[in-house]
Amino acid sequence: MIKKAILPVAGLGTRFLPASKSIPKEMVTVVDRPAIEYVVKEAVAAGIEQIILVTHSSKASIENYFDRNFELETSLEHKKKFDLLKEISEILPAHVSVISVRQPQPLGLGHAVLCAKSVVGDDDFAVLLPDVLVKENTAENDLARMIRRFGEAKAAQIMVEAVPEDLVDQYGIVDVASSPNEGESIAMQGIVEKPAVGAAPSNLSVVGRYILPAKIMQLLEKTPKGAGNEIQLTDAIALLQQAEAVEAYRMKGQTFDCGSKLGYLKAVLHYGVSHPVLGEDFKTMIRGLEL
Ligand code: G1P
Image 1: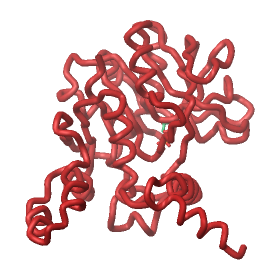
Image 2: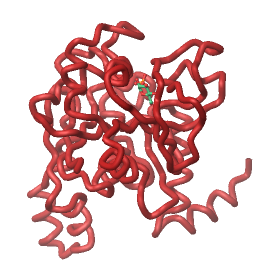
Image 3: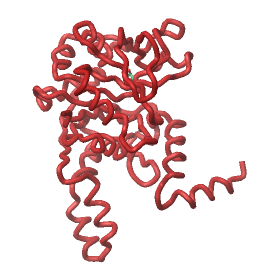
Image 4: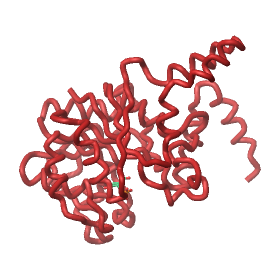
């Protein structure tokens, strides 16, 4: 079973300036909690027990968020604010650990994943890119389905969704014989990072959720620089696909790209209206907006 997940969080978030000038973009709040919490909880809901942050010196607040804060806990206890105490001390279940490794230079997503090699060891693992939030509409999440399929098919799983043809140059794009139904996987014949519009093998884009075998680390070590002069995870997956079966998994949930400002606002709206406590008042507030 897949128990480890790598979350690359070393990026400086230039698409989210000025907000990301002095706080990590992953710590920007979506409704009442930082964006990264949704991604970590998605991993935990799929059975992940060890979160491996690949991080940067400017991003210690992410590690602090998942650590205990003894002073704050003591103060809340003295003030008898037990609901808040419970909320901040139970962000993650006790069986989940968060550890971090550094990416010393910004050499690309593939390089970031490779930085976790010694922590991953011989274990197969998940990768979740925290810019993208996945909001689920079913009890079992897409990542859990990918993990199950990885076990059954013994094939790496790459989560994809359809995007408009004119946006293919912003994503990794997979080559498949036909588009699978939502919730299903299909053998991948190729994968390419950010192809030019008009030259893409399909309109199925890589969302930022991967289930990969441990051996991808050896492939990353020999992956040359690719698109953007960076070591691309996509290129290592293409190498893997030449040696063994790799599958594209078409997601059921909805994605929000919180690395972009409009995607972020969309996420706030969607998570806001479905918030268990704030949702109804938030809806009323939106209906009352004079636009
Ligand atoms: C990365 C991946 C790309 C994927 C995208 C999803 O690109 O390299 O294949 O489609 O994330 O968000 P980035 O957005 O970091 O340029």
